[in-house]
Length: 104
Image (tube, rainbow, N blue to C red; front, side, top):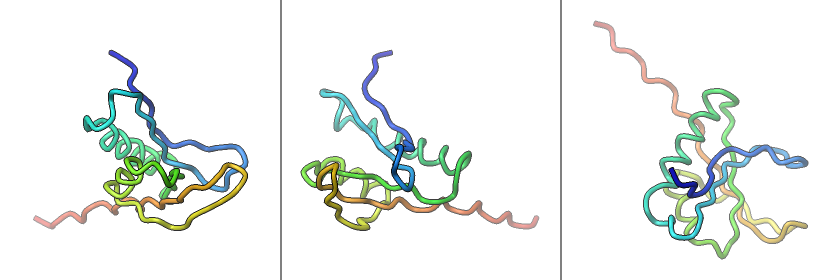
């Protein structure tokens, strides 16, 4: 019942596409919470909102977040330096198409 962080797809004002983002509070990192929550948020986004792959903006110094993005199947798309600072942009995969049913 304790609030340990947040994970979800964010539509920031002024950004050109949605971001899959995560934040766990101190003491809850490395316990296996972030990856399943991020997968569930991404699946919900794909199911209800769009098949387009979201991105994740990651501070280059945040190696744990970068490792999570890679575990989620995201690939480094580009590095940016803008008014928000320096960050990497990771592109998440598109949803898998439903498996074809095998005729009986």
